[in-house]
Structure formats: structure tokens, C-alpha cells
Length: 402
Ligand code: CS2
Ligand code: MG
Image (cartoon, rainbow, N blue to C red):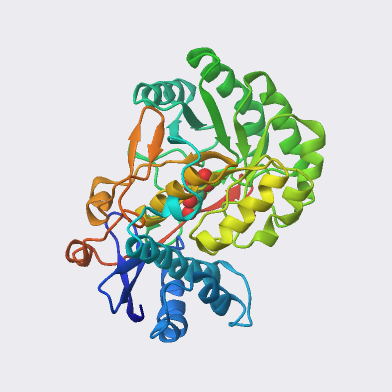
């Protein structure tokens, strides 16, 4: 088999997605997601100008060799743009291999290790009562694990809380919006939120919370300790992780489990976190971390240290990445949980897929390859629109981590 063509489909069915389609001389094609929220066209140009010309004529079955060719062969390593581009190629090649061998991708990764993939979804409200009601609503839908975020009194806009009753979507069309942040108000408030949520849902539901990189290590340690009575499944991104050693201090002070890694693009971003067991869950994504080939190595390394996966699954990861993550999560032994944030109905229409949710678990389906397709005619009706993630400022105007 030979790669005869590769092309990009950049569309915006309610939000932007960059999709790579690799075609072969046997009529089989594969899809890869190349979406990097707020920087979409940089990855599209990287693929178009620098990667696609090198793919034509290659044997798509040589997934490992093509990965090494794009990673080592570029000389310049890592970075979200490079690694998202490599991931798009890699995932499309796994899709092609599955279709060529007439088997779902999870079978290529060792076969299923479980019957379904435990997922968590997002609950949010502008205050505690609304957040509790939202958690209850998602439990009513069948979720066994729910992330809870709430507006913080005295802070005009909070991470994870939608505006105007719409489902939460981090990117907004136009130039970057601004939100406000107060660590003091948040730290005093967060335990009250989880006291109310835990009281309402009982002991068995898994509760999660995203700090979104906003605390210093000692502040995060205080948060973790204050949340211990409510036994969270995890607190996510308690502090920025460029300095992996920052997590040592948090770890020494609290038994609240820690998840991080949604912004990582290389195994090396997580190397110390894993080998020192400073985290419990690694949140790297297939799309930003270099694809299935790269994440399989990272997950196997994590397994040795009893660190489990909890991959990022927000709406900016397309249904192609969602499908890839579900095949991956069904197969590997040290799977922990998978994030599931619903795409809009229009996005689901553009990307018809076989994956399904039932009673707290998702399943990728048994179609050959990834089991996800793209309706190119519908995609063409929704062209790319510039959009950005917001930025955050402290109450005195200082720019801080969003
Ligand atoms: C988040 C995301 O899902 C999460 O845990 O942190 O909402 C994240 O902010 C976006 O995916 C950024 O693109
Ligand atoms: Mg997050």
C-alpha cells in the first residue's frame, strides 16, 4: 500500500477543527485530528508545507518509522505545533491499519482490557446551588464521575462556568476575552462547594475538580488538604507544570489525588512527575502529545509507577481524537478515566462516529479502524473562524494563568 494523497479539512461546525485525511492507492483512507485550540492554522501550515510533501509514496503500514521520520527527521523537536502535526499523521495511519486489517484500533493495541471506558463529564453553575443541580443532572444522565466547577463569589467570571446558560466552551470567536481571578476568594470558597456537592450526591459518585494551573504549590497544598474530607477522584492542574518538581511540595502535604498534563506535548514533560510518583493521573492527549505511538510509550512508562491515564477530552479535541482515546483506554491496562465533554449536535453530524455512552461508560465501537468519518460537504458549509482562549487577570490587573 502507498500513500497517494493527504489533505486538510479546516472547518468550524460551532468551533474550529483541523482534520488530516490520508488517502492510499487501495482506496482506504485514514483521519487524524490536528486541532490546537486558538492556534489552529499554525498546525495546518506545518502539515501542508512541511509534512504532507514527505508522506506521498510512503507505505502507511510503517507507523513507527514514519513517526520517527517526522520527529527525529525534523531535527527541531517537541512543541505543541510539531507534536499535534505528528499526532494527526500517526492517528490517521492507525486508522488506515485498522481498516486494512478489518479490525478496530483497540485490537491493534493489545485488545480490550475492559468492557467500557469510565468517563467523567462537566457540571458547572454560577453558584453552589446551580453547580449541585448540574452535578445531579449529569448523574441523572448516567454518569458515575462528574467534574464540578462553580462561579466564585466576588470574582466576575470563573474558569469552567459558561456564560448565558450555554454549554461551556473555552474558545470564543473574535480576539481573546478577559476573565478575572482571585486566589484568596477561590481558596476560601472551594471547600464549601465540595461540601455541598458531596452532601448531595453521597459517597459513591466520583467527583473531580480542575484548578486550571492557577495556584502556587503551597496554595495547591492548602486546597488539596481542605478537600480531603470530600475524597475527590482528583484535583487537576493545581499548579503550572513547567517545573515538574513543583508537584513534590503539593504531594508532601495532601492525599488528594493529582492529575496534570493536558498541555504537555512530550513524554519528557511528564518524566519526573511520573518517576517520582508526584501525580496519580497523566492527562496528555493523543492529539497534542504526538499520537497513539507516543502516548502508548508514555502510558507504559506510567504503568510501572502506578500512574494511570486520565486523558483530556474537552470539545477542542475533535471526535477523531475522542475515538482514538476510547480505543486506547479500552486497551491499555493502566487506564484510569477519560474526560467526556459533549460536542454540539452539528459537530457530531460533521464527524459521524461509532462511539457510544451508556451508564457511565463509553465504548469506541467495533468498526474497523477508529470508527469515525468526516462529512466533507457539511464541513465545507462551516468555514474556519478565528477564535481564542481567554486570558486571565488578577483583581489588580496583573496577567495570570488562565
Ligand atoms: C480543560 C479544558 O477540559 C479541561 O480539563 O482544562 O477546558 C481546556 O481549558 C481547554 O481544552 C483548552 O483548550
Ligand atoms: Mg483541564
